[in-house]
Amino acid sequence: MEKVKKKLIVMTVLLVVASYSLALAPLADFRAGGFPTVLAYMISSLLWGGTIAGYILFGIASKQRKQLQTKKQKRKSTQRPGIIVFCSSVPATVVDTVMAVSFVFTVFCLITGSLIPQPVQFISIATLIFTAQFHALINGVNFRSAFRFRPHQRGKQKKEEQKDDSDKEE
Image (tube, rainbow, N blue to C red):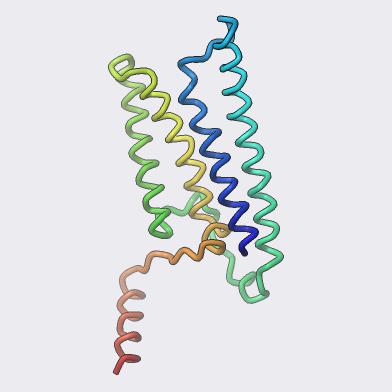
């Protein structure tokens, strides 16, 4: 699983670079010539290159994870896709919360228009893009199996496990 974990970390870095390259967009201009034009092409390359490379690595990591799984684990992994799962672990809860806040702030920026400075708006959009992508990934099977995230325990199940633990201590 170490190889899968390394690929997922590199993929996360690529998605961060791709998403936050948008923060440089106010400085770029395809029509200006010179440095702003070079910066515009660089931003486009970082955005699309990072996203495509990140998802290629994700596909490779997913294939490796499936090969490393035992038959018992394969039967167990009939889970929902990460895109429709929210707050499946503590790190996922943090990412989902940041995604919700950045979504609300981005909508606020769109409504208020020029009240918020343009660089702040681009950073908000970049954060929303990254957290939306990372939400689907961190709530998915690959991250949970590679990093051994413990799912949140819900009501009755949590009480039963606490009871079992106290019975073992006695």
